[in-house]
Length: 223
Image (tube, rainbow, N blue to C red; front, side, top):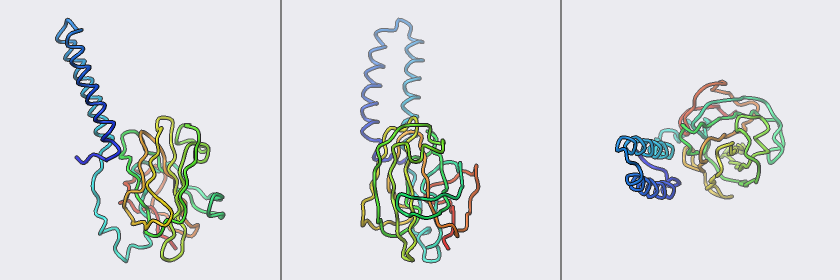
């Protein structure tokens, strides 16, 4: 299993604390059975964090073939919680289709570029930490906004949105970066959401309630 680089510092600190706690409670617990059960609990808890920071490889060559240039892939692993028409007023200033993806603590939390092109906008917004699937969390919560301009001139906007548990959004994108479909653009720690805004005339390939895989599942076809 490949561990994402965002997890290494936390996992190292946690491992040190885990070992110290196991040693400490070895002397505090008179019952060896109780110490064994407590150790198993700590190890299981640690394994969950390793599982959370997993980062499976995907085939970037396949999704970046020329005939796939208009295909928009999911920017995150999770569940489609909403597909709606909205007016986007931060950058696009026009009506779009917004697809919202909720990432539970059990999902892979790597965020990937949904389309290839050039980063023309990247901004971090301070905010609250409401439950990620609430509609008002899109702009009220801590979030980032990134816009990719494709070779055909389409602007595709997407947002990383912090949730009730997620307290840290990591964004790697910078203005003028060359974005390649499927490559990492960020990471959100512990339960969150990603919204993507696509043209009204796009063909939607997913439905509400569907599970999607970041960098692999096709969510729409651009006009």
